[in-house]
Image (cartoon, rainbow, N blue to C red; front, side, top):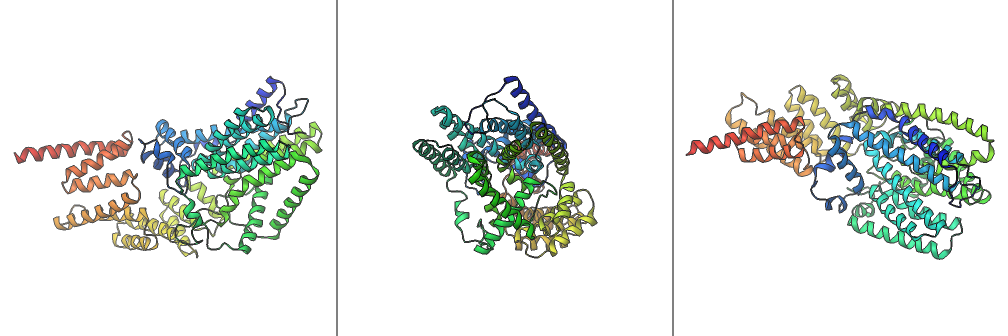
Length: 582
């Protein structure tokens, strides 16, 4: 096997292989099309398209820890096409994954090309990538699109570099540079392309001058990228670990670093090799088996680097280099330490490496038979796992079983049960979450806010306010708690209350709703409630202002239509008032 970068073979066969891969990728996760919005999908879908939608500039110049303008653009496109229909968003994810699987075939074909033009190993590698069950999270979770997009542009950028490397065409490095920027615009881990390019150039004995030129051009792209970020995210990284808003956890130390590196890497190796018992919120595993797995992987890597030539060495480096950003998240306090979606880009190298190794040791017929069995197993697993993401109820029910000590899992499962009108079950899960030690203030606030919803449904507003004030004490930035307090005071202004009490309750509700809007200016429901409060206070100018914002955000939604009706009423009341004053 060589990594000469040539791509030969019969066009008809290659076209058949390509279409088969794309179709397999699509069918393997087709269950996602019937899935709804889960976890933070609703926030991801509405947030990017309701804030500064008229300003293209705002997509690319942001001060946020997560700077992903291409993700926001893609969601804005979906919003324009589908509004709140989840099928369209899931279809978009499926199309990107299918395209990525086709690109893996092209990349593998160039990396594994032989003089006889045999593309079968490349086909098998891409098929394994298309159906790998660990990809279910990135595909079925709309928010996981960020990994799909980053990989799409990463592969296009690497193909551009292959053109530059083997055809000596300067357009290739220009293509690589453009798609490198696009990959980082999709997710931060796209930054590793520069390391992959340099590794490939060195291992293929590319002239030093051209390696340095490539590295220099891509380094300039990195500079442009960080200039466009305006430093967003950098201040969080350099903050003292454990402080408010810091990226790093206070638990980081040399011992913890080595522990997390060994066990976290062991977990990822296990899921690449044997993608069973997949879990949305896995914890860093325990047990000597993961140490042995890590040591075996390191030993095998060293052996391959020394004895197996540049091809395998490069594929191993692809896995390691692209996994490094994900391993750093183990020490983060702003995200779950482990996640199967982080394997999406590294699995490109893993899939090709697996095909290379098996092609070396197995005869052709045996190789095909082995991959048929692998593909069938993968297909069943990814189809089943994608179905788990059907709703919050199924997703968090599965997660609670696999991560019984997770506050997030119990909280979200409790909320899902409440949405299904299982009050007793939901309350039980929420109290379980509240009793789990070492919660963050934000996690405690979320649980308390959910408990307040139960009391609001019972019209026990005093108890609800107790939970909500406790939530704000735990997390002063808890948007949901401020919003619920506003709603509680709205209910306290119901018919039967004296005029003075009604006015005081509505004014208090307005103050809490304004605080909510200050924290989350895109919440249409809160703006609608503000409009109602001002309407009741007969301040029709303010009511009209907020109803108009709701209608402008989404005129075809049920909320938008209700706001439009009330907007007309506010205008009529205002006109009647002017007429009576004449």
